[in-house]
Length: 144
Figure 1 (tube, one colour):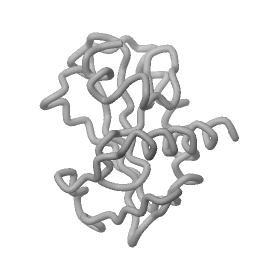
Figure 2 (cartoon, helix red, strand yellow):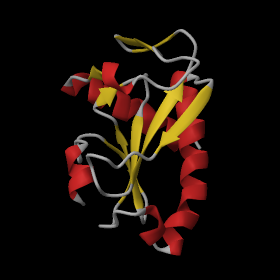
Figure 3 (cartoon, rainbow, N blue to C red):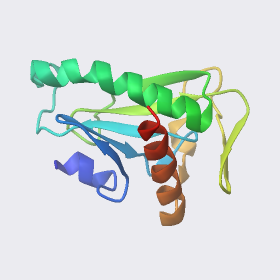
Figure 4 (spheres, rainbow, N blue to C red):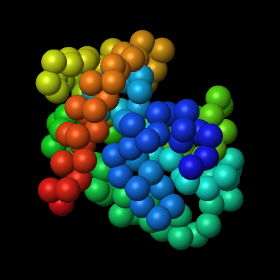
């Protein structure tokens, strides 16, 4: 795995691995259910990924959207490709919603709703909260 994937807590945050991509729980949660969708390659530009990696996104996004709908019942889903600090190709997948969402003992609101996500006010997950969220999203993916 590349350094960007490792920086986002791999392997503890791993939800699912595909041929070209991994889905990870985002350790800092601006909204409940925030993920990282990261390319497994060393590419630092989206256009440098092989065509198969782009094609695989069709299957992945459909699966992730359905799983997150089950877990957090989002209103919108934002895919942010920022790559300013972590250079390898990755998206921040941010569920957006009005109000609060709760999973186990973790309740988060979307502070930016209905505007842009407020990434700077993210909640840092504990190891136990990370494990709970990983388990919940994995289970939702498996239901498909």
